[in-house]
Length: 95
Image 1 (cartoon, helix red, strand yellow):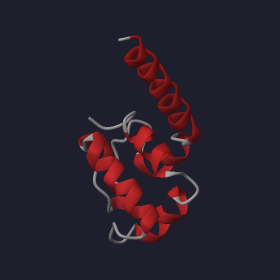
Image 2 (tube, helix red, strand yellow):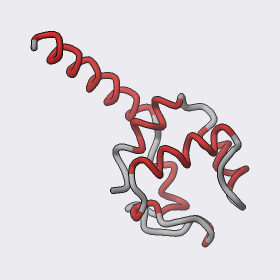
Image 3 (cartoon, rainbow, N blue to C red):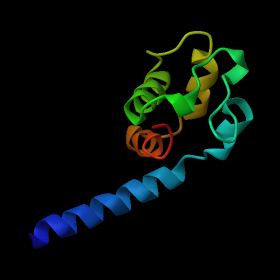
Image 4 (cartoon, one colour):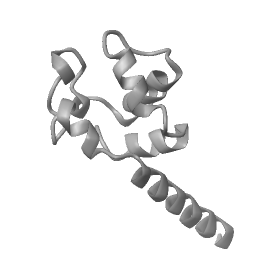
């Protein structure tokens, strides 16, 4: 039991640190302060997506395997983050 608690605390600390690395404020210009806008009138509304859908999209943009018209713009926005950072950030937005 003690090992599980320690592992859980360590995982939470890593997730918290990773999510802090992604600057969500930079996203607000296109997606809205509450993720309520279609970026440039083309994207899905982020607040309507699940955490898993957001993580898949962010990591796909980074890899160049996801997205239509916003593919190039988004790749530049997420390229500097690790997959773990993007996953942790996705857990903080969406549903």
